[in-house]
Amino acid sequence: MHKLSVRLHLALPLVGAVLISGCVDEFNGSNIQLDFGPTVPAQVLQGVTPPPGPFLLPANTHYSLYGVKETRDASGAVVSAEYTEIQRFEIHQIVEYQSPCYIDPVGSRFPGLHATQFEARMRAQTGIADLANPPAGATEEDLIDVATALQRSMNISEVSGLGRPPRVIPRPNLPPRLDPGGLKAITSASTALYPGVATACVEDDATVDRTLIPPPQCIQDESNKLRLELCSAVWKSNPTLYAGTDRVLTEPLAGEYFGIVTGLNPINGAVLGGSQFVVKNMYADYSLYTVNWQFDDANGDGVPDYPPGATPSEYGTPVATGRPSTPTRGVTRVVMAGIALAENTIQMSIFSDIGDDDVHF
Image 1 (tube, helix red, strand yellow):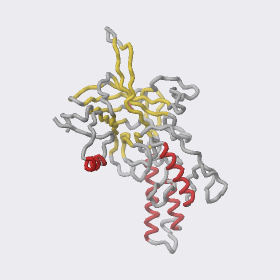
Image 2: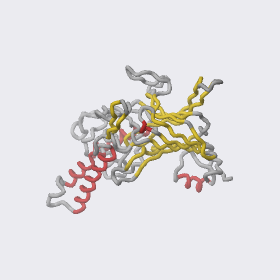
Image 3: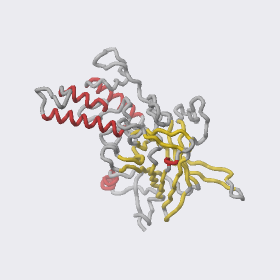
Image 4: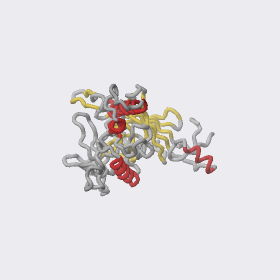
């Protein structure tokens, strides 16, 4: 029998921690791995009007993975069900181009620049409006810089879903749904909001409110600096607020990245998918598992913030649900069937008591 000791987040820094400290606290929780179907809906960005057509969840929502313990009567009928929230998370387009804080970070060429404007800033800096007809003084380095910026713009369009029409998802006896495409990340959950967006660049209007984020088209250094300061302040005070970047898809600007929804990388055609949570408890002894979406409780009164006309539900709206099987000791597997849409099937594996495992390590 082998003893396995890990920390809450399984990552390469663990090795360094072992070498420095000489020991690691034993951890007896579970590793939960989930593969989401490609059409599981993402959420609208806070403060952004959703695009027409594609099916997206409201901005003030989150997902929850629940374990359910059922009580049955003598006939086998379920008479009560006790829900335990195992993990709360959100699903976002991995690149949210409409976010006011979709920016380039410290250490990049233009810190604080809105990433969608990288090409515009590079063209302005080099004076190259047309790669095929560059100005007389343009260097080879300038041409490479603009060509690289152009490719980045194309990549942003692809991974965000802008570069392709929405996917039509047929539903028997129901109107089809439209999926916005692009890549979707499973992330930490937050109710935080960004400040509003200003109506002018700080370089152009000395009276502009500097508590507001400069609009994306403001690409000069002063606006970039203010944008970086304001966004960084929000992230520091709200560490679970997700902000993705096209620079390294698995390393967001802020928040936690748990994995990605099944799909193809539109840049190179590689198959992507899979997410995992490392949790403190076992969570392997439930008779039913379900992934639901629910409205947030931003005001903290203990009641989800239902919009007018919404029907309250204690645990939210089921996305997929299923019963477990145990193919081998220490492993629980669940195939959760989609409720409103069959393609929303979720495959889940729970590796319990990973601090003391004589099956996998």
